Length: 412
Image (cartoon, rainbow, N blue to C red; front, side, top):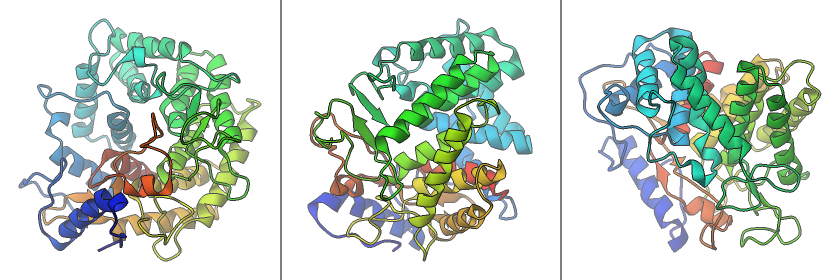
């Protein structure tokens, strides 16, 4: 088994998932929502990791290729579609192009309305925005006005997003006065891309502002890591009464932030006054990411600074996000080339320790935290026990998407 969990009531969910991963490694079937579906199609072992994982997703996700089957506007699906789009730009696989176009047709009607149970604009949730990034390319490729209309509606939705007193997006309306690192990736890359695409430069200021506010409120100067969330009012059950910060460093939250930094920099003009600030923030984050990389495996822990403590484990989504952040940062010239081997070591750790290959070539990604949040109430309290006790899944798209993106940055 890849990890050892303390057997206590806090870790029962994590233990169950770890046993499922162990069964998969041993060749036994694992009961899971995304358990691979038997198929006769062989995925070639000679293909790049990015292509092998994308083809694996297509095999076990029939809704991606069947226009009659439903899909989701949720941020998780948006992350996957963004990764498939990036891969399609490189390899021009018609199967990926079909999946991307069908996704757009399912989600957006002729009037530019997004019709999906997961899209609830009145929730003022930043999670609503992430899938919108796919619409830029769909509008460019198809010239269908509905995609432009949908983009404009998502942008207008963000104009109504509640904010903290210093202008930071609330993560959701139901989380008042709270900024979460997750929201960095959900909103800022979309805002920056919208500004570039429609030539509305005020969006560059807004995208950078959100990232800089998160760094201001959530960075710990001692470790260089960022806490998961900040409560401006300092009243939430999880919030430090003095700082408003949540108490732990959750790997995927920091990963969302790192990916947001390198993606926003794709669109921010070279002479924008906040560009050097964001590059500096990225460099500081890279120092911390390298510092907390597990030296044996090259991976990162679910709670980043507490490796080796009971219940903690090497987590796939955070590891993939950190690899992507470092590799893209180097490729774009934002980071020193010394971080390339750090990224490569992390990627090698994922492929050697968290990937299980089936006889037909299908890849399965192990040890992905399903979800973690903060409140409402006291159950999701941001404690160490909370993070390591959340359910662990196989093939969760929050790990699969970053794996594909990281593979592309490393040309793997």
